[in-house]
Length: 506
Image (cartoon, rainbow, N blue to C red; front, side, top):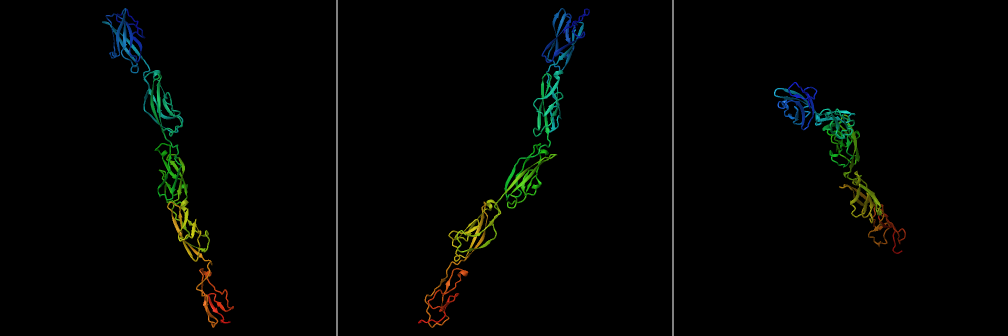
């Protein structure tokens, strides 16, 4: 800084002027410059002149030194002792004093500090937290305005905002105001929390970042979804009150909220069934005893799952419960005993009787096998599917056995077989298969010739193993050497009577 002001009639030291006024000098200096020098010149006599700063408070920042003398023009070097920070002090107003032994001159130095981009933006009011209702409309305000300051000036202190990462089409940020808005169609079930990194950039390229956390508030926009299918097979003796199966559904709305709280129920068509469903757990239990033989063999239960949202949403599924038979029915004959006639001499493989038992179970539990454990020790009969047959080689002989009493057992094929029995009485019907047999017949009978007529002279007796008419015997004289009419025989008793006297000597 050169000051060309010299007063010939004023013996005081004079600064050489290069300013806007006689004693005001303006200079600029770059902030953060490690060190530097400002030069001032004045006219005086070396033995009489000294220089200093009037403001002693700046002694640690500046010092003054005479560095050159040319024809009574002195150059003063103002040394900057440390870097200057424009943000701490934008300018300095220094008073330079030049003195001789008697007189003093003053010069005002106005030192402007030039700004450099030595500050980064600083976010205010952190942290940034907000919530947005899912499915909000286009450009919904989040309530978040990021704001950063930069102590630099002009372009270096102008801040713009942007998202540092790709947020897709979910959020927008105004680059000048920092207002963050949500774009339509944000789905909490897709992502329930967004942590966004926002950068603030000044005109010199310095960048600072902050985190913005946005929670997405749930609405009831998801219906329950069943995890089925659900199908169970249970025996008919399934314990009363036990859990048959548990239906489960999930709701993608916020966990633990009423929007995802599910209640289960049967539809009206499934209300009259031997099952109940627990609303909060989906557990299906039996409420009465089951009977495969009288109940439906399979139940199709329609179950609803409904959430607890303000506008409830629901879904349904079908639960299939199939009953299986257990061997709980005993075979039953229509009568404890039955009587059948059987003609003697009936040929082998002939049908004697058809015996049927009923079993209300199903499958193997109702498949019956028949046997004759008693009354058939001689093996006279066989039984096949309840049909009693005359066995091969069997001789049904009335004269040997007139009545057969057979015990017929029907047993099912269950794992633990059940059985019952009936008594079959076979009355053998006689046929005329036996000849009469005379008993102790005298071959010669002597009678006196004087025997009167109508005299019983002897009797014959015969037996017949047959019964009834087949066993009734009648007698007659088949042939005789005596004249006709000499003898007669009682057809019923076999008594032979002399009808007329006989003459030994004819």
